[in-house]
Length: 351
Ligand code: TXA
Ligand code: MG
Image 1 (cartoon, rainbow, N blue to C red):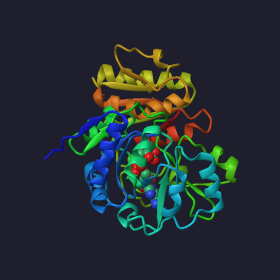
Image 2: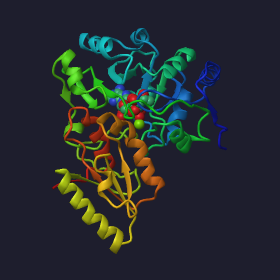
Image 3: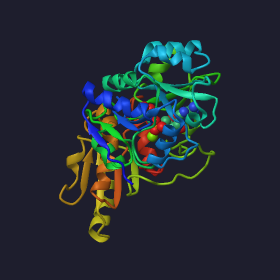
Image 4: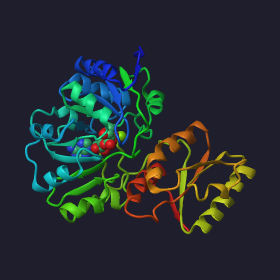
């Protein structure tokens, strides 16, 4: 039986209603500055199980625990190493998740029996008011169906989870649009597990050198919604539904190559071609023939728009997608390219 999902605004009255839903074991999707989250009480094992069910997510992939203020981190973790404390002071509240050793307050159902837990203090005002009003830590993955891009607007959440969860807090589109930076503070040298808008250089400027996980460096596939993998495991393509090819090279070469391939696929094979580009290059192609979607004109907008653009390609039912590469920028492009490369199944052609 589908649930009657309440779509509520971000008024205090609505947030109070959502907090009551959490307290009675329900699921509420809420905005954060990164992506929308699907929240449940971190202290209620039945609610935790419901998250995995609603998303269709394998239960061996741990969830992040969200609290509304830094002080609330300490009871949940055994120890805060010095470098972790520096990151907390510098970047929290904000788009960063620290992996720390957990106390027994965190149920094994959240961490898949790992001894560590990911902790995050979102900066989004609605998120913090919601968590504070729940008066309990909130475990929350991204509020998307497993295998689909994370949700960066309330409409995405409705598309994916309407009828599967108790309520959605409708707020503005997410400020950053890519999930938080995750850094493991339990290793000798802190290790970046997922790049985000808090970049490696921002982190290294306050705690010195960090490791970059081999999953990121070697383009091994790690999906938020699949179990942690063995190195070398093959990528499974989920979303967007159409295969993506990323072309790396000078704009001129990339434009020429995409133009050639698009016209072959469109004119001869009668396929619907999607082109993923930016504002600078969007007018270089025939918009009457192809579905041209732009990420915007600067790296912040690229990140903010990526997931909604990937979803739009599904809505437009394109058969094949050709994309520019956006990594000739600075360190901020690491998170964007990490998600785009994953979406392409690491199908990257260097020209
Ligand atoms: O920005 C974000 O982090 C969003 C918002 C809602 O806060 N959340 C999010 O959660 O992206 P999720 O579940 O979609 O991604 C969390 C990632 C997963 O890849 C999971 O494997 C990893 O964090 N993770 C969680 N706990 C971990 C742990 N103890 N050790 C290693 N990785 C962990
Ligand atoms: Mg996710």
